[in-house]
Image (cartoon, rainbow, N blue to C red; front, side):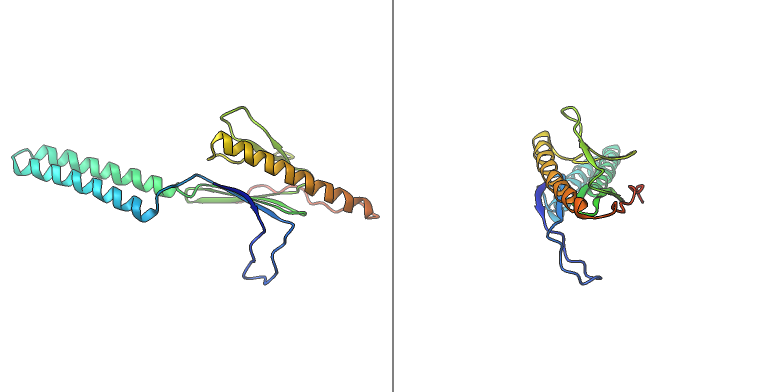
Length: 189
């Protein structure tokens, strides 16, 4: 889990310098095992099950081989589901004009864009993730973090959102007309 704010990355297609006023949090589950090591462990378990089934088949018990092959299929299916969800999480980018939440869940990805002046972070009960809200849009964030990391993220996010709002309020007072603030957009898939 990385809750440290980072400056926004340089985008290759625009050629613009990174905006130092943006803060970024990447909130993903903590995967301690590399994909190669995970695949090696799954292959080793499949090999052991295959050897056991083959040994019993040679001894005259072919039903055990069938059961071991079914276990191998179940193990491979579970490994694929785990691999699909290994990078699940949210990436939150907080800037002066937009608050973007990029959500990844399996093969699906969506982005929700909100205005920081209208956004708030609702704290939930212990064990439940907080939610970013803007109007009728509600997006749970920090879903894959433990409670201690959620509390740390909430503290950092609320501090940075407060600092950004203070800066936005100062720039609004200096403007002679009301600012043109777009309404929050619906999630896109």
